[in-house]
Image (tube, rainbow, N blue to C red; front, side):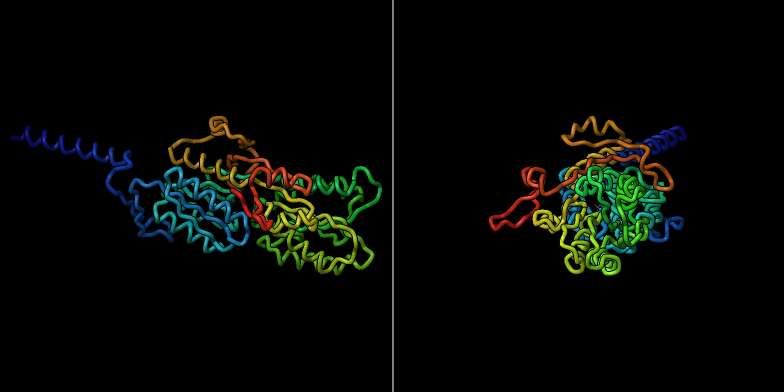
Length: 398
Ligand code: BGC
């Protein structure tokens, strides 16, 4: 009798262990919940995370104001869904608190992976720690997440190169290597809480430095520093107001302005409006940009903006989805993700460039291209990225 009880107890223990192991492996396992106890982060105390075998991806985008984030969000959602993931897509309206609560909701709703483009790169550390506590992996999308260990990877473009392309365009158009006359330039850079803004700035400044140092290029406002040329939230209105003040203060009738180096298209729109309103000269002022937003495409075609730097958003989301799937499968992706994927576009794996203050974040970086009136048809229309309807109106073709 004693022996029989012993045998029964052993069988019971073995069955319990077996069912425990199986429930951890199978996606068809009965619904499990993980409950956050007293030690859980404040925002998630008492939260029960449902792990019912679904694969959930939370995508947190900064705002809907900029054309690109709408497209990024849509591309990412579509491609993750194609890969059998459930997607929660939220836009934070450029508000840090909204983004934090969006991310908390995603963690509560069972996200396995977060894809985050931060409103403010350094403001999400604590909610990202919460994600890490639950084993939720994080990809920084386009903008690096700063001062956190809880980010696994970064997908973006060669952001330094964006600034280099803008500056090289200015150098060639103003004939800085071929003509003897000196030229005047002003700078409209990005949002300082976006790590990318500093890379764009540095790429442009390093490239223009020899000409600024030699006096070939002048900045009559004397505003060349990162912060004094910055544009909060990449706002068109703020960019416009700042350039109008500069034009009214430093460019009276007869003083020529040759170029405005703008970090992206939303600031370029502001600069173009400021020039139309308050510039007294007759020359065409060079205006640079980045993104290829539709409003700016029209301006490049009509000549009021000179160039933009295009970043292929579909390709950025293709890389992100491939990376996300590999992470969810439990792998630790590296440069082999690129060779195995055999994409028909350039992508490099970088383990040095992007230090977020806590660690160097392994990065997948794509190649930006310069777009001018000369190559816009070939690069953006013949490739189908943009199309025209019968009335000639431009729309995104992807
Ligand atoms: C992106 C740019 C964009 C800017 C403003 C940057 O982080 O890389 O493409 O124009 O944010 O949203």
